[in-house]
Amino acid sequence: MSKMLGRGAAAIAVILLVGACGSDPAALAPDVEAEAQQNAQLNLDVARYVADVTVDDIQLMTGEADLVMRSGFGLADGGCVKQHDKRFHCSKRWFGWGNVSYTREITFYDSAGEVMGYYDRDETDSIDIYVSMSGDRANEKMSMEVSRERDFTVSGLYQTETTRTWDGWGRSSHNRTRVIDENGTRTYDMTDTTTVTGVILPVPRRSDWPQEGTIERTVDAEKVDELGETTTKNCSVVIEFNGTQFVPITVNGEEFTLDLATRKIVEDE
Figure 1 (cartoon, helix red, strand yellow):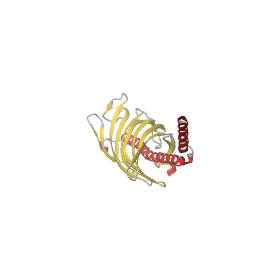
Figure 2 (tube, helix red, strand yellow):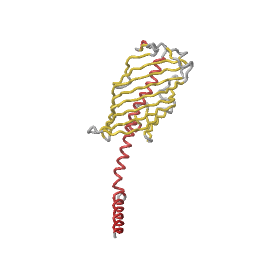
Figure 3 (tube, rainbow, N blue to C red):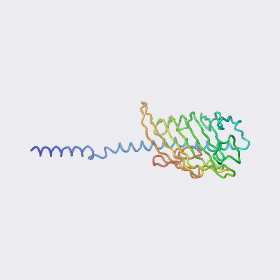
Figure 4 (cartoon, helix red, strand yellow):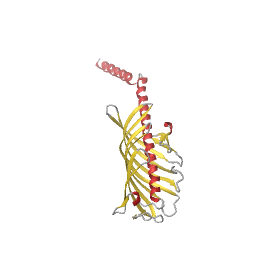
């Protein structure tokens, strides 16, 4: 009798378990669909953030290199002072748009990798440019606080150059970002690390479009809700340059297209 009761209880338990987990799959579908929608929205918001950051990086590469190597340009005239280690520390400059400024440190190297205390068109082989940026900016869909570091090295300068190759790293610390669209307003603290590998720009520069190379970013997107509660998701981002103004950005496996001319994801335009 006890064995029969035990078997009966087990059977009831199985029935209850099946009823809770498997009898109504449709009841779970809204949660799964909602999570998928949230992930898709997050990927798009991260792509928007990365679009702006990426164009900043390209402008830093092209603008700083052209400025330093322009014929007749004197570093002292640009607010740069040579230190005892032969590196030039430069005063604050304003960036292309928004209320964003940056300072930079410039180091010249010869073909043997030795630090030079000057730039020479015939002797300088590479330049290291360290940049610290801060400020804020906004457009119709997004506003952000900017706090970034970049350390880029441009090589391929020795003697006659036809291209310049950029490598380096960067990081951003808690860039408060607010996105506004048809789905409402979302607030994030974006923190990221960046690796720049083999980004090639032509010389003379015919456009701002890199010919090839990649920028990889790891973005921690901390979403802040109306009550100040936060949830953080880690996003893997890859930008692959192709010689045109339209560049693929992959966020957690989902692909978007960045228009380098507008700083926007194509579907936002």
